[in-house]
Image (tube, rainbow, N blue to C red; front, side, top):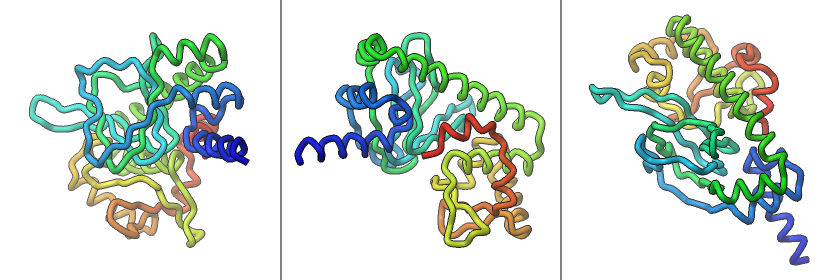
Length: 245
C-alpha cells in the first residue's frame, strides 16, 4: 500500500508538470527526485535581468510574467505562463526568457531542475534532450507568430490574437456552453503591457468586444471568451497540444 501511494503521489506531480508528463515513466519519475520546490507569494520577483539562468523551471501551480522596463520606467510584458509551463536555460538550450524580470502574478508553486541534474539525467535518458529541442522549436514559432501579429495588427486584432493564444494555453469550458474561461489572472494593464498599447485602448476595445457578445467578465481578473472567438485558433495544433493537460 505504501509503495502504491508513493507511485500515485509521483504520478500526480507529473500530471501538473507538462515537461515531465510527456516523458516515459522511468525518466520522469527519476527526474522528480532531482526537483527542488519553491512556494512563492504574489508579486515576488524571482529573476532580474542581471541574474544568471542555468536551470529549468516548471510551474506546478500559479502564474508568472516576464517583463522589461524601459528608460522611462514603462513596463513591457513579453510573456505570461501558467500551470504546466516550462522555462529556463540549460547550456545552449534556452526556453526563455533571460535578461528579463520574472514576477509571480499570484501564489505560485515553482519546481526547479538544476543544470548538473539535467546533464546527469539526459545522459541516462537522451529523450530529455529531444524534449528540450521540441519545446524550443515550439516556443520560437509561437514567439514569431506573436511578434508578427503585434507588428501588423490594430489594437482589436492584437487583443483578439492575445486572448486566443491565452485560451489555447489555459482555456476551460464553463457551465455556459457558449463561453470558455481563460484560467489566468488578467488585468487590463497586463494586456496593454503585452500588446504595446495604452490601458485605455485595451479598456475601450474590451468594451466593444463585450458589447458584441464576444467576451465577458465574470469576476475581477477573469475573462471569458465566446466560442466563436475561441474556435478561431491562432496556433498550430502541435503548439496547442503543448499546453493541453
